[in-house]
Image (cartoon, rainbow, N blue to C red; front, side, top):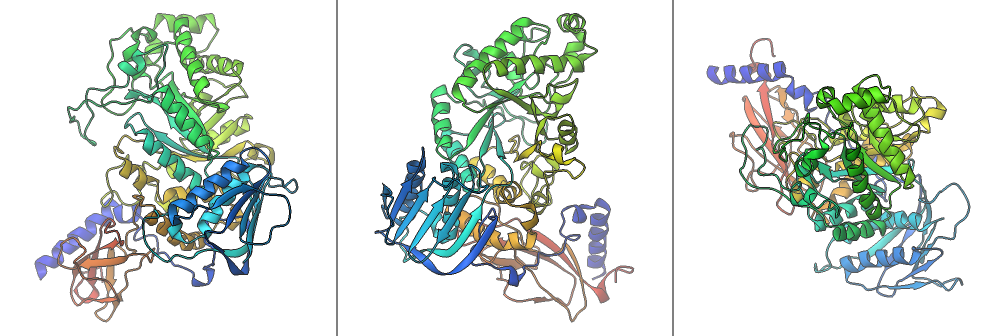
Length: 640
């Protein structure tokens, strides 16, 4: 017994010294308390501006009609809604234009003829009764977001495939809803350069965004580790630049020895842009410059400072080799590329990166030094500003606007450029103070490639720590800004960089449920945001994720890492969701579907290593939580 006590004491002290138990938020953060009185009949994410619950339900059956009236794209929204119903229920509802006369009953009306109030293009008014559902908006966009709301008012089975046999009653609770977004820019990013994803997954990803009322897909298409977009004038960008000879394994210095590549043809990109457009999602392409350009320089080394040779990078990080800013042919090269990009993407923004561009090569390059002299620039930072401004002038000539990471502020920036602040909120504050529009993307809260819990229990990630609670607490508008400056904060975006995300399943795991928290940050009124209320609504969101068979992260049981008990005490293991079950072990083994089922508080009469994890009906399970249960009378001296 003495040996066991010393071991536990050692483990306990090491954990405290390392700080990991506090970092992961399991000890320091109290278990989630669900306020029963906050439960509402309608559980919508993101939370609407105003919901008034009424008595009764509207029931969709095979005689229900989807009526539309108004301007462009209204019919397509009706057809989109009809496809959702058909996929889940098998019912092929009639989608037809409204006659304009008063209907009797059993219809869902989508009207974009609303012309009052402050709803904007994306807002809507929804009224559901036992006889009908009426949606009014100024634009088809508003109708589309109303459909996402109706989707969440329906049973979670609306996300399933219709081949399941059941007696689901497709009810929409009676209510009056008024809703519009807080921010015009609501973004989600995906890096396809470190790891490539097929067209089918890009479409699925876009559907996930639409479901959460995200209106911007930031598509990171070029990097040191791979060039992923076909440029017809420069075919070697994909013939050479899209392929790396191997990939680094995890956070080691070992490589897998497997050639890796992939890119999107221009026809595939057109297909994806059209797909996103039908969901009112704008795609912002990112073409990195002047840094993160090794893949391009491998194909065309003449646009570097040294002339190469180079190879597509096989490891992550930052390269000193960047585009030569002293060579006019470099600008012709990137402008030719951007010309083809502009033809493919109708977005008003073109993202040029601008981040992590070391100045080492520029300091040693005669052409770059001559450029600094000729242009009267002070240093290499002003040379970067010259580079960015020259590209911005070109984009403006094509009717587009430049957007880049906050490093584009270095050396000065023209007022028309928009800044994505990723290194914190300070860059955003600086940009807004200077009069630039800003998208907040701080890695501290909105980098979804970071861990969702302690790194000891989660799959390998980049190293940041951004659990869903931390995502939800982020406020995009800094209080230090003046009222005028705050108007420059257009919204926020979360990123999904893929150094350690090699599969579609893992991408979904890192995206969900954090995208639910993001959606509420950028859509719902600040004053209505409340974690306990959100957690209640999130329970039903998990059910929707289950029905659509998404590989979302399953929350771990809510129990501390170290628990001190009297012999008469009991230990309760709580769950954040009530759609699964908790199983546990006390013999040091990992819980399996055959392990004891947690049904009531546990009693311990000796120091014990408890392991617990959550299981959902599909058989998937959460990460394991290890709890050291220390009985006070048996605890080491000083820990009683």
